Length: 96
Image: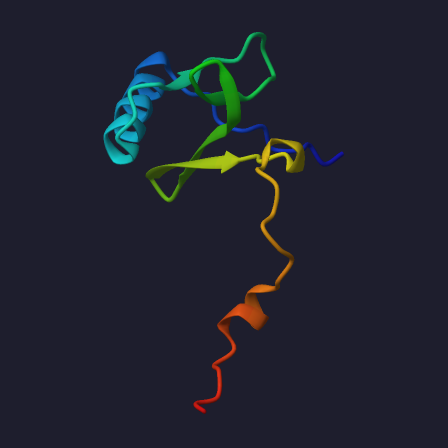
């Protein structure tokens, strides 16, 4: 039977260190790293009271890294000014 690999657990110290790093990097003291509310759930990243993503720890070949996955809901975005694609916006214009 093949068992799925569970993500490595993060210590309170690691969460505090990542939180301090994110606050310094983003220039925002409102960034918080929240421990899981119960076993088996992920560590969350919040700005103020709004959870904006999840935090993961990876340990490979003796090196530890952390990754943040941000989730942005369409309903939270401001209305679009007009519909254009990135490719169309980057298209060079002809000189007249």
